[in-house]
Length: 274
Image 1: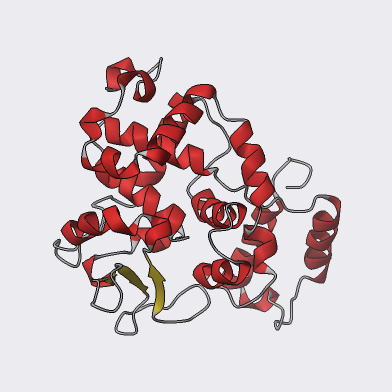
Image 2 (image 1 turned 180 degrees about the horizontal axis):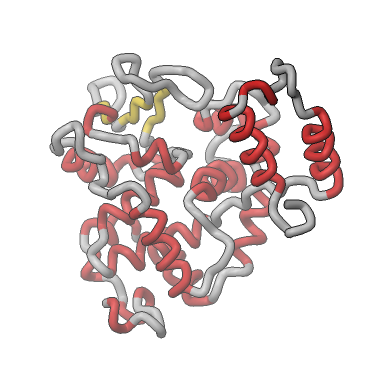
């Protein structure tokens, strides 16, 4: 695998699969594979694994604007919530109306209750009842009515009405049209954390809590504020213009997407998609 140019994750997956199917070759089995573990460690030393890059906020805004111009409001909302609520793709896909917590007299913002204790699964770190607020930084003022409407769906239905894998496919297609490379769904979570640190809208502790991580070391992987700034500087000019427009007019764009300027939301190679 190393000489074929594969990433180290493929070796980890292969070894984990072997141990699952053949317990005898696991760490506690009588046929353990010490050389395989040493080979992977050597691979890691020669080619350190790459961390995901954060998605710049301007790219998020441009994506939302492009989807809104095509009437794909739920897709734009899903990307927005993933970015500002630091959600993993699987967490977004698992959301239903039962995960929405409406505002109260004490807190006027909608909340997301992830992995409620009444449910069958816990979080990645085996914790129930993880919570995230859609506060003012996340667009809580105008986002609330949309969440209220989505919350009226029957609980078994995905909150944003997207099938598994559909959002990933839509994102890849849109990025191809925009001529933007090397970005995927996971980078929305990284981008949200880096953006909040770069703009000083949240403290490092706030970001860590919103990421729902216990270890400070997680900030090394997620708090890449200057990298997010560098990624933004490399975006195509039309992406930047549309991103800046949506950033300044997010509420109006989501509520009246038909008012988006054609010269911003229409891509040269996608006239047939409009």
